[in-house]
Amino acid sequence: MTVERTEALLRGEPGRDESELRLQEMIGELRSSAPPVPDALRLRVQGLAERPAPARAFRFPLRRFALAAGTACVVAGLGAALVQGIVSSGSGPSRERLSAQGEAAVTEQAGSWDSANVASDAAAKSLERRTLRGFPALPPNRSRLQAYDATLRVRLADTATLSRAANRAMRLARSYGGYVAFVDYDTGGREGRAELRLRIPVTRVQSAIVRLSALGEVVGQGFRVTDLQRTFDRLEDRIARQRGLVARLRGDVRDPSLSAEERIQAQLGLQRAERTLRRLVGDSRQVTSRARLAKVSLSLTTQDAAVAAKQPGRIERAFTDAGSVLAKEVAWALYVLVVALPLLLLAVILVLVARTARRRGERLLLERS
Amino acid sequence: MNEATATWSARGARGEHPPRGFASVAEDHLGDVYAYLLYMTANSATAEDLTGETFERALRTWRRFDPARGSARTWLCQIARSVALDHLRSEARRRRREERYEADRSDVEPAAFGEELSPELEQGLAALSAGEREVIVLRVVLELDGRSAARLLGISPTACSTRLSRALQKLEEEMTR
Image 1 (cartoon, chains in turn yellow, purple):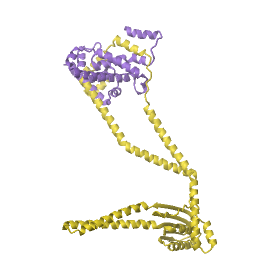
Image 2 (image 1 turned 30 degrees about the vertical axis):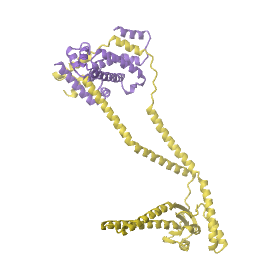
Image 3 (image 1 turned 90 degrees about the vertical axis):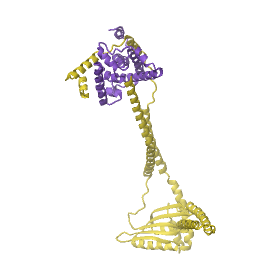
Image 4 (image 1 turned 45 degrees about the vertical axis):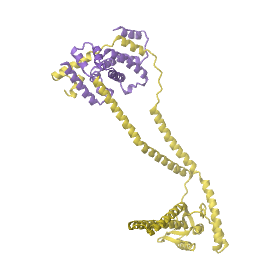
């Protein structure tokens, strides 16, 4: 008999053949002959029901706790991001202090330099007045190798002025002992622009920036210092060790006690060591060269719309900073999730395996009972 | 009406009501739970003990019962199943320990699965395993629907129907032996 017919008979449908009729009769007999409940049992259960309800045992509300904890984490994360944004957006005074120091240093430097190079006192004073505001031109650190990078964006009145300014910038770089690495000049149409990349000795970069900023109206500037001393020191250490190795290998090659094969091996090793030494020396020279000359990127333009980049207000800064903090929090949460996910999967698998094993055990127990 | 039932009803008539909720549920489903455990254990004395234990556990966990998740009868049968499985495990350990399984079996009194059941049906039920009797009592005697019974047994409704069909077929074969 099929499963469907068994279910149909249970629902009360009439049997179709002798076998179904027998089954139907059996079902009817089972249903109508419920075992009577013994009196003692009935009294016992009645007594239970009359007991006062037991005190509610404390059950740790795991789901509620997880929901509350999750909500609290999200709220705390958002709150921390907002607080960080508000706090960091109000860091104007430190920038102003730095800019004032930079201005004083640049003014002093410009004053001492240009007194020898500017024709008149009036021009020198004019130069001092036009010293950059807010440009943190830190003096170069003479005890360490550092890479200086500066960017400057200057607006000129017209293309003729732009042309003169570009030429003046190139002459300036050469007069300071540097050179022009790149020039892109375009004055076609009404507007003009020029992009110059200058290499100027780092000892004179401050003065150069002051002179370049005097070419027109400064609408943007930037400054970056990268310390190269550590890289240089490591290279020098490696070079010293490599020189020692080369000297030793040269001695080995000249050793008369070596066999022909050993001498060939020593010569090959010496060639490799000498190649490595040359490479290291080249790297070291590159580092010193980088530190000797500062990179100054100068953009000249005549566009009216090229005004100084509007400084974001405090609210905008706050949201930007809060957004970056939030992005970091999300990144950390994803990181934790990625790390924890295999463990969670393993836990789920173990739970499923345990459940399957338990059910199998119950089934076997019931079959054997 | 027997004395115990009369007492319970009389108290209700006098206005002495036992705590609502659990008391009424216990009264309504005592027979179902007892029938279920009798079919599981094939021993009326054991079924009686386990029924009492079932209702004790039910009373302790009564506050956690949620009618939205299932009927009270299904809930009580789940507790009864847990109690019965604990008992069967304990019995299996005891038999392994004492190694007097055959002697013990011979001392067990024959189960009466129901009043007015034919001897052939009694014999057939006694020959089935506890698992086979379990599905029969749930689906046939207690008339639980397929989904509720399957959930209680921890299997799918299809597997429950298949198990019932096989159990009934085997019962029929045992009856005609």
